[in-house]
Length: 417
Image (cartoon, rainbow, N blue to C red):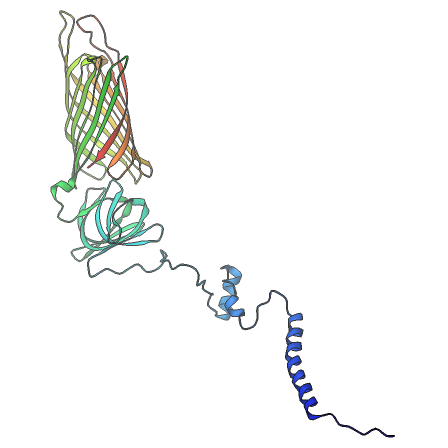
């Protein structure tokens, strides 16, 4: 018996065809995955995943050959670099400054003095900077610019790291930034020429010994384009068990007139000294002379001066038969050093001697070292070491002779103004 010759049903062909259509793409993708390295990106995402090229000689050569543009890291924050074009002069008369960090600030210049730059920012109010931290200044407003040669110019300015480009009545003037001493508003008021400092220290001790010490130091200074005047005062008062053990005062008044950027003459130099326990009731020394501005840098100033004058001394008490007054000529050399070794730290040193002539045994000397550490914008912590020496102390009427040297270490709070 023969079997019937059957043909597959049409539905079977349909299922086989669909299976092939489904299996073929899957097999093709699997085969491509086996022949591709695991870390290689797909062709679609390869451009987006490409790393930012590192600049170097080889990279630069390839870019020059192909003319391609370096890829940009879109995740990096926007930053205005120093090499980019600075903001233009503002019609609203704003000043612009660029810090050494590359940041730009808009606002108004308050003042530049003693290498301290004060700026009124539109967003952050009043700010204080060390002058060395300000890389560039662009000001369309008129300010007074004072230079080391005491030249005073009024105009608009562009200040770079090396130059000061001033526009004065339509004329361009280019000067060195290192010679710039101060910036103040044009038409400066008299009070803008003054500055100073007051420092006070108080110490108490109670118990077996009741002791009170009060020390003070202050200076007031006025400066303009051609002159410089300064008044200094320092002193101390102390007592133990209601009996005074310290009582001294030293003050000076000095006027300098600049004849050149470096040289100045001093027509007036007055020194006053009182120390009860050094047996000096009054010591008054008027003199005149000149000086040399030896160094003017951002972090240091040095002044050397020499004067000649007259010294008058009146003693508190003397032995019977001794003269209570002493008069002589005096040669007065001196040096003052003002430094800014660290940010918010000032270190000042001063020395002066009054060498009596023709007899030098009555020479007196004074030295001081003052360290100021900025605590806040207004207050400083001041540490001062003060030395006074009387070469030939005068005996008191009771026969005792004061010591030649007095040393004083004080700690106080200072206020700048």
